[in-house]
Image (tube, rainbow, N blue to C red):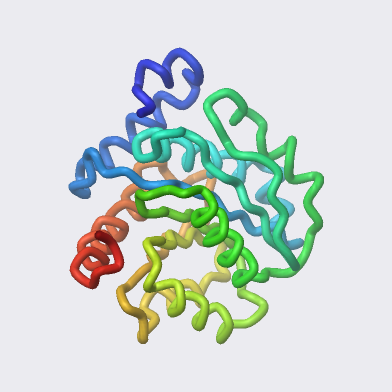
Length: 228
């Protein structure tokens, strides 16, 4: 387990985020809950400004601040997607500073193939051997290549112990709002948080937007037999 003392020793810049995430988890009744956290990042052309201004790096740090409260290994797999998926490193206490600027220049700019990214996240979770549920923070700023394919993929994934926390940057996120209410799933396995201006969005608001619906999913998933 990652203790606050370990965060203070290895990554003092994450202490405030870890504390804020802990408060959010406690408010949602998730104190002591374990989960495998992943970060899926849109690398389409329209995202260039968010990489340049530090918005994506900040989200990576926020994801890690949440992970140290939930995940035993304190490592967050970072999955980039555009026209296809690319993955280079995990965000950890010892490497998180500047991790986005170190890795994303190797990634091709592309379209927004949500489905390829979802399949990659599922594969990452399954091959990890994790027994705790997965919490996938899935960031994008636009429409997917195929709405119907994403809806089908989310329905298919609703029987898996994976929760999708969609985070929308900017203004073009109508599809994510509709996806949050998609019918035909075993359980509601997704949430949506709109970070219209990600650098102006507070850490507490982001964490509350993720953990509140994650808590509801845990209860519903246990009732439906998705989680033991």
